[in-house]
Image (cartoon, rainbow, N blue to C red; front, side, top):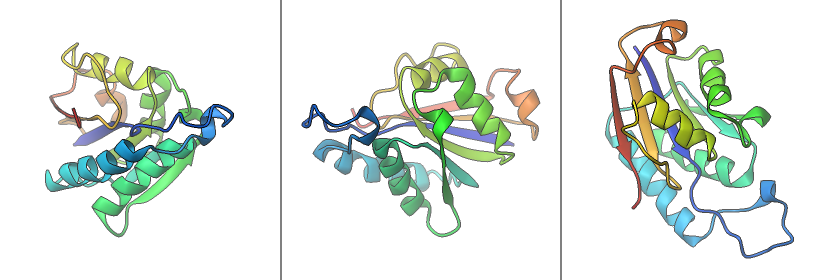
Length: 158
């Protein structure tokens, strides 16, 4: 079984206009939402082999909350190509991980485009800290990425 969780980074802080976009931290709402959504995903029994994160501070911080919720043994791997990545790169990076259960923490618009495509239009948007989980009843990423997901779920803080 292939399982993919897409997590859009939590709400970021725009308080310092001089700060580079890559270095923006989470704001108070993001710091509150990320551990809640991470715990809710962990409570479903989903357990990734790996968490793949954009290198942006807001994504890395969000990924850290998810790693904490899953406990020991789940590493966060940072990937520069996930920063501002289009949907095809997000999916290709998950597939290239070789893991059968993956969390990807990244940014819009790529996250929304991918979630919408994988859900057959059922997910219209991925707000900050949204979590979409897709499951394929196959053990091969090449097969999984060429057919519709067998099931999907969606959760968000709003």
